Length: 349
Image 1: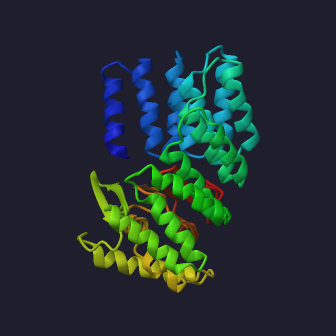
Image 2 (image 1 turned 30 degrees about the horizontal axis):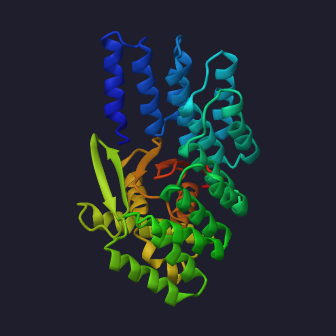
Image 3 (image 1 turned 90 degrees about the vertical axis):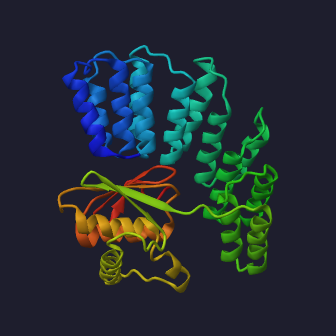
């Protein structure tokens, strides 16, 4: 949930009751800190552990994966091998996911070959999903499609969704239509694929096709997943959604956001007509609220249930410049650390 304060309190209690040396408890602390956006604290606990088990190694690799820190994940994985620990199914999911989030294509291929060759781990659905995502994100769309065709199991919605998302990024509308067809045939209740294809058609000027996709959603009773963002301030979790008017500080939040938008406009940001509906996305509201309510020295941690959109990503980078603030945002895919006008993902997400 990203409840930092509560996590700190429970961790402190483990010290008081003498569980600070319990490997299983400390593994959970590593995971907690990682999921709360505090990867450096997670690493400190990991380094403190004198008796690391396989879960310890997997937790740290997974943490780095979530933060898009592929090279650090590889360092931990290689150190695990040197220490004689034998990676398992989950270890390889973690390292392949790390490579995917960091664009480390050759490294990902190396570890995908290694899992069966060196450790007799049969590649499963999650491994194939990571590889499809890795190849597709990097623009190797045909190679990703070929890998899907070679999968020994039926591709899931996650697999076709990864290909569809990459097709939008790299402008391959023909393959996007194919991926969407397979995705829709699976009757997934998730609206993400439908919204992606509708956006692809709209960007290509095919408004009729875009409207047909949205009609198909309505006919199937599939509704767009609402975007939510939440953050903890003074031991209370504040939740925001797009165009939210329920928060008691909503007027002040919007005024602050308007002020921030004016400042980043001076840096060259231009909000086009097509982006006007995104002005009050939940993460933008949370950013403004955080600036208003947290001290200037404190990083602002925000959690989000959907993938952050391109406009919000650009806006928050610019806001980090004009305010000098640091923002740590966890979306449905990974963490983004915004500071000084740049993001830890390197605009690769």
